[in-house]
Image 1 (spheres, rainbow, N blue to C red):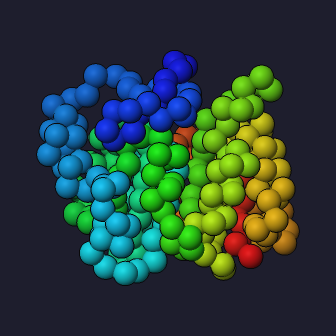
Image 2 (cartoon, rainbow, N blue to C red):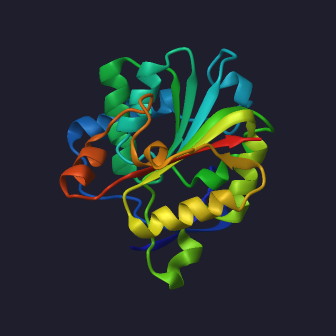
Length: 232
């Protein structure tokens, strides 16, 4: 995958190194229209206080790397009394989420179409009821370990942003990612793994939406793992 440097909203170099794709196949006319017309309406605005992003005070959740947006749109549909922030630098995925939002007439999602680390300073202490990291790029080679999303610095920031009693949900179907996701979260003192038996992490929690990617993994024989942590 190509390496990029993340850009802040004013175009200045952020100093963060981003590994991954920004764009895939050429977008269809519908997707281009959604990016031009709908994204400005539901984009996360760094210039506005977090409390003003949605115009109401309810539980908020963050999804880091929402892929095609099915999971995030499913959460927003099932939990209309909550608000959601989704960060995804892959523009094709952003367009896909916009389509889900338009089809479902969902207004409780704000999108950051870039590296999530650029908005973390805008999310204050105990501002989130929970966060999701679903099926991240596994970066299985040891020499690429520093490219994995769940680094100690990010976990420290999430521990600050997730309120006590809130949850951190991690999921993957990749054997290597299962190990480093679980080890990274368990190494942080502020998060408690809630599993009590193998069934707890071998089966998708009933309140989390199923996505096309999850079904594809199951059909291919890749067993997904679901790691639920609670903020102390």
